[in-house]
Image (cartoon, rainbow, N blue to C red; front, side, top):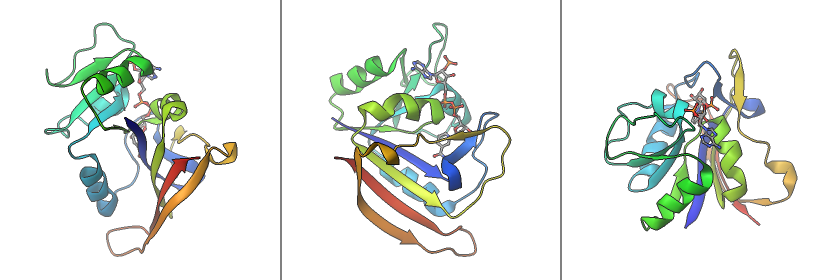
Amino acid sequence: MIVSLIAALASDRVIGSASGKIPWDHPRDRVHFRTRTAGNWLLVGRRTYDEMEGWFGKRIPIVLTRDPDFRPFSPAHRVARDPAAALALARGNGAKELIVCGGAEIFASLLPFSDRLLLTRLDLVAQVPDPVRFPDFSKSGDWKLAYLEQWSGDAENIAARYEVHERV
Ligand SMILES: NC(=O)c1ccc[n+]([C@@H]2O[C@H](COP(=O)([O-])OP(=O)(O)OC[C@H]3O[C@@H](n4cnc5c(N)ncnc54)[C@H](OP(=O)(O)O)[C@@H]3O)[C@@H](O)[C@H]2O)c1
């Protein structure tokens, strides 16, 4: 099973705020996220799961939480108490790819287990209170850029670079 992390990053690797919500709207990246996650098992942190209520449709998220009383919004959604249990659950259900959708804590916890990073790098300085960040993976030497696509800006979308990094 391949483990992929998918994220949209503003400059300085900012992905959101500790107080919640992604501080930009990027329709092209939303379409990319919807398309890339379709038909796959997803892993989300409990805070991101709360933000995404109603979004999942037929996708099956595994929610990572330490809360023994946590109940997901749908009985079809699954719960894991730690990253190893989440990986075992997806693998045990025959997942070919597990897509880790954040947020910051979950990206940091799953980076060591991951094979691929699917990153939308927005040409944006995000001014947010209590910023949370994607982990600084680039200095480790463990990753190589395998694919790069330039997304030019338009009336609705900030310019961005779509990067796929693979573990060396
Ligand atoms: N730009 C992007 O691509 C992107 C993607 C996703 C999210 N975001 C943003 O990221 C922010 C949320 O990130 P966040 O770091 O605050 O929260 P998060 O990673 O979504 O969720 C954190 C929660 O996950 C659970 N958790 C974390 N590590 C765990 C572990 N090792 N084992 C078991 N459970 C664990 C805990 O839940 P309990 O407290 O229930 O125990 C923890 O409170 C929001 O601003 C969101 O909009 C951005």
